[in-house]
Image (cartoon, rainbow, N blue to C red; front, side, top):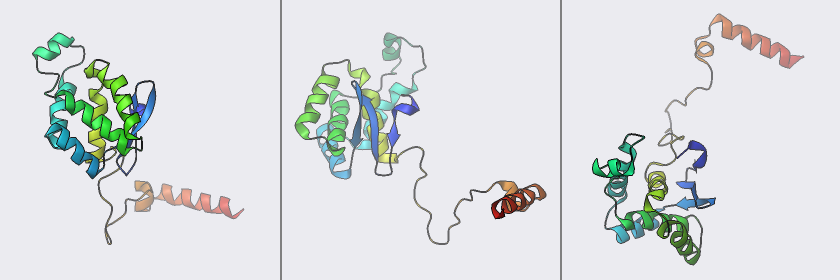
Length: 170
């Protein structure tokens, strides 16, 4: 999936394409518990089952991928449950979410939906890729936004600061 197709937030909410539009998925702990009940597997196990699909080299035919084990070891519910409960957790009412899953997951080749289920699970477990894990604690240094030259007080950075300060004063 292309990066522009996935948008995440700190709340583990992620926007993914399913069918003709982007939809919001959010697997909170209560939703993850429902996924566990439906699949008899926890999130890391589900991720591992689907991750085999990503490890197969590009350009393989579907038959080659299947023979080499490059489809992963997922089951039908491993795909359905994270999508259904992710949509519900993302704010969709359950009957509408069930209709979406019926139309865009059940009635289509399942392989199309594996990346969606996997991305929803990954967002729930790891959070968005573009945000670092955890928050700085008290006393922990905040990362500096200044350049290395500015932090070392080099002549070039000092000259830039002076020039910026004089421009701001005028």
